[in-house]
Amino acid sequence: MSGIEARFRAAGRKLLMPYIMGGVTDGWVEYLRAFAEAGADAIEVGLPFSDPTLDGPTIQDANDAALARGTTVRRVLADVTGLDLGVPLVASTYYNLVAHDGPERFCAALRDAGFAGLIVPDLPLDEAGELIAAAEAAGIELALLASVVTPAPRLAQIAERSRGFVYAVSLMGTTGERHEVDASAAALVERLKAGTDRPVLHGFGITTPEHAARASQAADGVIVGAAVVRRVLDGAGPKEVGGFLAKMRRAIDQGG
Image (cartoon, rainbow, N blue to C red; front, side, top):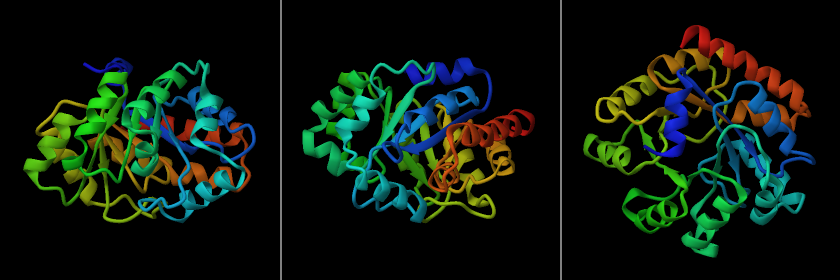
């Protein structure tokens, strides 16, 4: 059993993983501390990239803000090195940045900075072998994505090769806030869980505490991105964003 997966199982509850773009503001690491204090079970940290094809306007704006501040992958890794948050950090980025240094060097750098996991949303399963091997060698858990249109045989392969958890993409589209949780999400989670006991986290469109509670009834937990990032971009500080996540934590615990 992987390290992240072992932590998730030991939590004994539905899981909450918020997302923030690395380097989006001065002192951005204070948000990480606030997230952990609010009850996050892991934290996803975006590594800024100029062409985030899977992300909607909010996270694209966060990418732009981080890059405008001169943020680089190395800067983000330096910022988190030595942090003791008590929860795993999961890096998220696009394969261009992985390939720039090469998978082995990239994964080793993540490990040395204290990351436990990695998400690369634009890497097809059929081309993931090199990164899967490099991540395993570095002790980095590469979580793979499954979508609502992924056929059953491929879902089984994704679940088998994923480490830590499986990322269930709940809709066809980009990241962003939504008025409702897509009805197809629960069906995807059920299809995944029918073939694996690895934790399945529901991402995309989780906007309110009510969404989080509803989604976590089927899934093992939720990933919350744009709803968090929008608050950061609007000027909310770590305490305020942490308060929002604490409401999500309570809703999940009461309704998940």
